[in-house]
Image (cartoon, rainbow, N blue to C red):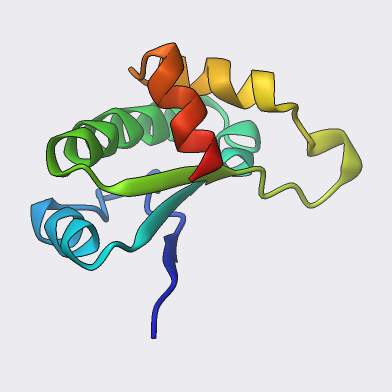
Length: 105
């Protein structure tokens, strides 16, 4: 049994498509972003991560996928507050209400 899909956004080829989004929505599964992936990437890789994240967010909205964001921190200095994560999600195209719901999962 799968509880959630972790880290669907990479800097390479997009790993989330309509089939995955539709299946996750139909089965009530959670799809989770890791903030640390964005925090620890630089240059072209970070730009590609953002591009894939924007597209994934559009799919999540379209199919009403339950999704969330986890810190993914490996070290204490990578931890971020809920407000920081909320603002980050607004950067990815969510409004304030959607961002707070996204954080709560």
